[in-house]
Image (spheres, rainbow, N blue to C red):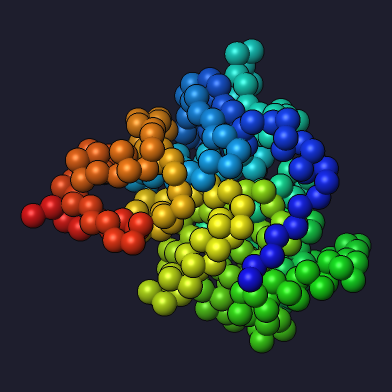
Length: 277
C-alpha cells in the first residue's frame, strides 16, 4: 500500500486554512503572451478537482502560478494565496504540493539515475548535488516508494534510458517523498500505453483514497478518476463553467467546451469521449 507522510506543522496549518489556493483578479503572462486577465478561482482543501479544457486554455500556466514557477502581474487589487499565504519559500511550498508535469519530464536531466530522481524531490531540484544532504530516513523513504511504484529494479538506470511510463512513475515518487497534502498532475497519462495508463491511474486513485487531494489539469476526459468531485472548464484563459462532476460532464457541456460534437460514455466512474453520431 502506498504510504503517506504528514508533519505536525502541516496538520496544524491545514486546520486553519480552508483553501489550497485563492486567486482574485490575477493576470499573468507566459513569455510574451498574456494567458490570464482578471482570473478569479479557488479550490478548497480536500476538494479533488479536474481542470478540463482544450490546448491553449491556460491549464498549465495555472499550475505554474500555484507552484510559484511564474508570478502574476502586480496590481493593487490582485490577490493570490496558496494555503493562505502570499509569500512562500518555494522548497517549503513544494513539500506540501507534489507536482508532476510534462515540462518537468521534458526538462529533467537524462543522466540522473532513478534513485537520484526520487531523492531530488526533497530539494525540488533536477538530479541531486554534492551539497545536498539526505538522512537515512530520507533514503529509506525513497527506496520504499520505488518498491511501491514497481520501479526498484530501475534505481541505477539513467532517466533518459527509461520508458515514458517509467519516467512518470519516478517523477510521481519524487513528488511523494514529502507525503504532500495535494498532488498537482498535468495530463498524467499523455504518452503512456493502455497498460501503463491504467496502472498510473490506479496508483493515483489509491493515494486519493488514503487522503491525498488531487488537482488535475488535462484535456483527456478518461484521466479523471472517479474520486474527483469538482470539474472546472477553462477556455482561452477564462473559467467558463464550474460545478459538480456529474453535472459538468455531459455530452452537451463537453461538446460546447471543445467546439465539436462529443458523446460521453460513463463506466465504473470513468468517462470516455467518442464522436457524436
